[in-house]
Structures are given as C-alpha cells and as structure tokens.
Image 1: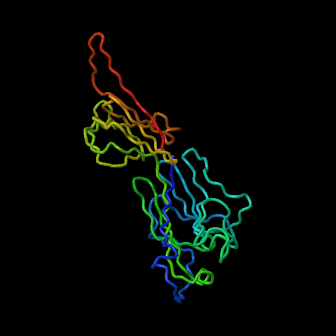
Image 2: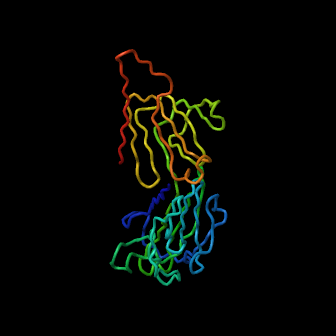
Image 3: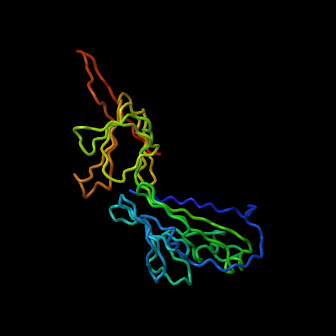
Length: 279
C-alpha cells in the first residue's frame, strides 16, 4: 500500500517573491546532488538515457521520477501494480514533455500568453534533498528560472516539489499502554505508544490497552478509514510477516479487542459494537 504526497509550494504570480528581474545566471540543468541522496532513493538512467530517480520503500512500494519535467511516471504498490499511466507513444528526448504520469503545469494551465501548460514540463529539475523516515523515502526537487523560462515569463522564481512514498498508517493510539508480542508472543514487552502515526515497516504484533473509542487507518491509497467502537476496551495491530510472506506487505490487521475477562451473571448480556466508515 502506498501513497505519494506532492506538496508543491510555489509562490503565486502576485507574490512578492516573484518580482520582475534581469538576472541572467545560467539555466538550471538537471543535477543529481549525490550528497542529497539517502537510503531508498537511487539515481539511474531511464528512457532516452534521461536521469531518473527511483524511490523504494521498506514496505515494497516504488515510484519513478524523471528530472526532466520533474515528472512522476510510475507508482507501484507492493503487488507490483502500477497506478499511473504513461502514453505508449510518449517520447523521452527532451524535445517535448513526457506524456503521462504526474506532470507539472506551471506557471500556466492550458493555453495562454505562453506555451501550453507553461514551461515546467520542458525544463530540467534538480534534486536538492532526500531523506528516509522509518523506511519511507522522500525527495525534494527544485526548478529555478533561466533563459528558457525568462524568454516566456520574465520573473525570478524558485519552485520546490516534494514527493514521498508512505505506507499504511494508524492514528489515535498515542499514550496507550502496549504489549509488544515480538519477538516472543508468550512474554510480551510492556511499553507505551509515543507515536502520533504508527507505520508498518516490518513485522508488527502489538496489543494496545485502554484504546480510545476511535482510531483511523490510512490505507496508503488515499482512503482514511474510521474505526469507532463501543465497549471494546483495547486494540490490536498485526501484520502476518513471515507467517504469510507472500502477502504481508499488502495488508495489516486493525482489531478491536477486549483483553481480559467479561463476567456475566445469568440473564445478563454484554454488547460491543464496531463501526467502520471511510472518509
């Protein structure tokens, strides 16, 4: 399961950060700063011998980004299924934009005073930073003005583009007492959850005591599933790991639970509810 996040903080045309200028430094060519490359981010040669960045997460998802156009051309979930489409007749010769994937339409969308969709798709971006957080790679690309852009749009600018792959995550369990059943399920390790967002970079088998009435499961595909309950006092997070090696990267289990004994007298009843909704 995976999600690609793409914050694109670019000043608007009316921003004071975009003032007319006559600065004529060299054009920003595609660069791949080796110091900016972190674990899970690899620089390789793509179609047409164009430089390509490959992001690989610990949970098995993968994305490919070309520095030309800063275009994401592939996003594969752990099963190997690609969720993006690139036209079969797309060319990788820098004579025209890459057709498909996730392109940039900047600083103009559609037709207008400059070429269709602006110039960001036709320029080389630079890798300025990458990092890896709990097995989730993130990189930042940068585009600056140059003679090519200023011929159409005579402004100085700096555009940064952040892309990352994240896996499934669970929120709402921070502060709960935990019983971690890995590595020995017969002798769980007591602790307390300190994370706001719980991820699954590897094997997870953990009981959460006195869990809240609602937790949120982000399936990594853009869906947030609310799991609300009544009378379930605890929760369990688990993935099958080595027990089901062929599919453990494709799902996790979020369970409501009642750890301990519920004692009922004759004619008494105990009711617990679980409500699932997707937002």
